[in-house]
Length: 101
Image 1 (cartoon, rainbow, N blue to C red):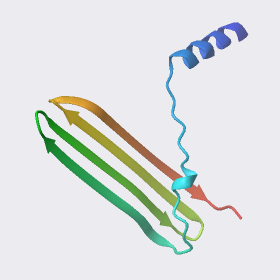
Image 2: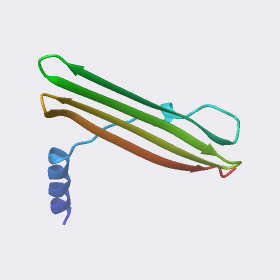
Image 3: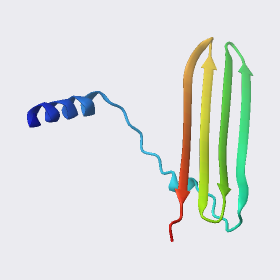
């Protein structure tokens, strides 16, 4: 059984993909309670010989109560050139913290 588990973990690490994201650096440092955050959108359209579309959106929203904290992060990047999608990335993260003491 131990060998089977080792084999499964070995294959899982070989064929899996992962990404390390520092979510703690995205927190908004504030002492106020309630809603806080920012949202941004950028769109770019270039047309020379081929048409290039670039869309970027990001959101960083926090809701803080006396002992609870909700954090929502979102990032979307889209790049299309010559009717071919070159980049299409989406990232969501939702976190809940509760202060015990």
